[in-house]
Figure 1 (cartoon, rainbow over the protein chains, first blue to last red):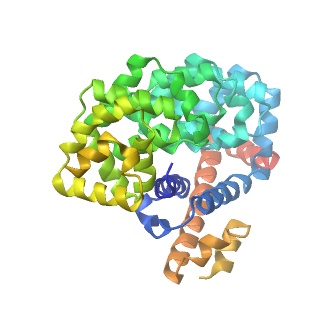
Figure 2 (cartoon, one colour):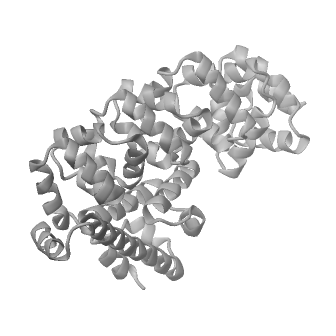
Figure 3 (cartoon, rainbow over the protein chains, first blue to last red):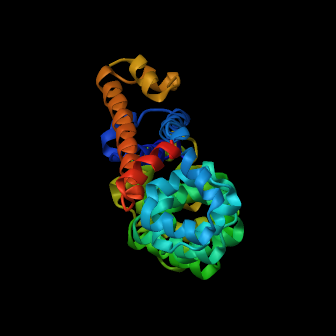
Amino acid sequence: MTAALDAQVEIIKLARVLGTEPEELDYLRAAQPDDLRRLRDQVTDVLFDGDRARLGGFAAGSRVIPAAFAATVAERALGPVLCARLTALVEPDKALEIAKRLPAPFLAAVAVEMDPRRAKDVIAHVPADLIEAVAGELGRRGEAVTMGRFVGFLRDPAVRAAMKGIDDATLLETAFVMEGKERLDHIMSLLPSKRLRSIVVAANEREMWPETLDLLTSVSPKRRAALVKLAIDEDLEGMLPGLFAAVEDTDSWKTGLRLLTELPQELKSQLAPAAERLDPSQRKHALEQARRLGLLDDLGPIGEALSR
Amino acid sequence: MSEDDLRAELGADPPPGLVAQLDTGALEHLTGAVRAAKTRQREALDRAERNAVSPLPRLVRKALRTVLR
């Protein structure tokens, strides 16, 4: 991920924790992503640890009542906010038994209010079918940020199930904001090629260029080439101008052009006609950037197309 | 509001690099946002606690609150 996109994502996540809109935090745009991440952790800690002692009584009560009864009380009386805090305080096995008895919409509401770092032992053992249902519910609610916080705590079968439960655009949004991007390449490897194709098409149709640029920078060169190949096969004309626009917006020319230089020669040749059809001003600007960064020769046929 | 106010809200030292690049207005907004989030959180928990015990008779409610705290 580029520093600008990283900061953008961190602001989205910090805004979520603070219960405000990302635009309200525009003044943080120039901040270092690591600083923003640290600040978000500090805010989360102060929100979640402040009431720990206060909730001890509820947590102790859960130990002595049967899971089925606890689930009824949780849903009918405690509600999602309280349950989210209690999940971290209840014995993981007991919390899991209670969770299995709760409906997906309620668990989705709990997930929104939860800090997954505090309940990782519970999350890691939630059955895949329940994960799929909860992910579907979160997807319908537009809770990509929530899902992005949980991905890192799920095992492969659960990740597969979660991805099955959400649509392509939500999956891209979740990948954009997920914690632990270093796992993204592996996660993409869990998807069948048919799904990858439909994600690429959705990215183009919805013009999700920052998300796509981020995905391409976060995966391995081999997977990146496979995704670009899918876009070429689908004849997605909007992809290259869209990605160049995202690169311009985030001032990520070095990263963006380097991604293209790393593509196999065959794909560069296949992308060249799209580069030639770019809007003249966009083509000129891309050419200037490629020259400035000394990447023009490495772009091969794409560079030649930009020069025409 | 100053860096000290933000530190007090967070209960920890805010990232120095971040604070250094914020002007007074931005620092004030950020500190206010953290404070507002804490207040909302406290109110949400108060509400959830009230709802949790509201179906019970008043005397039992009072006793239960004492036990739970």
